Image (cartoon, rainbow, N blue to C red; front, side, top):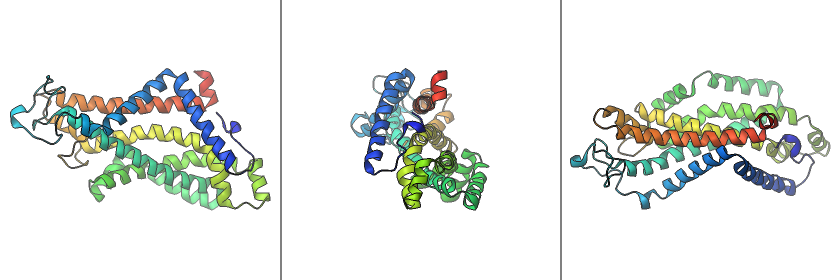
Length: 301
């Protein structure tokens, strides 16, 4: 799918509905035709299902402590073992997936909305507006995402909302850039010029006729950056700036595991594998969608 495949004539909601329908069918064909993308989608879907069903399938209370059973290896009673406080690792992994997914999805959703809007305005109006906005984005990009997130969480405090806000802030410049580039090309196309000649407002041209044409690029970027958001949240929790214990988070579990790694390998191994599988699944989906959308990449593969 390229921009030339998208509807480029001025019209009402039928064109937008057709675009959404085509995008859904396109994603379905991509999953079927690409085995690696399908594997990534299945893994991600499985993690989502397990996170939603955690209260019903978790064998133990994730915060219930038992000093008698501390640092036990995998067994029939505790399939993945127990941590330093005797808490069941499998139960904590299931509930911890909720926080990793919630933070990853909400932070990237916020970054998509804000960053895409910034990129749309900068690319459409150009001139000084574009220069000022993109220079501000360059300032944010000058800081590594993890360092910037660490600074913001340290200032705001370690809570779910603050972690989501910090990760979203680090991702906004990326979505602003990914939206700006195609908008600068689309604003000079014939169907946009025709809309101006017919007296369409800038808001109608931007949100009704330009935005649908850049949705595929934004979706691909969102799937790739969600993996980054998961890694960032785990990194913040690992260095002690995540959600306060005893709330189970994958990054926090890895940190606790490394503190007791000489006594039990399971405490650090299984949450690390969980982060690895989730990030791998998101990268597989993002790479597959990117290769399918970009014709050059699609032919090369």
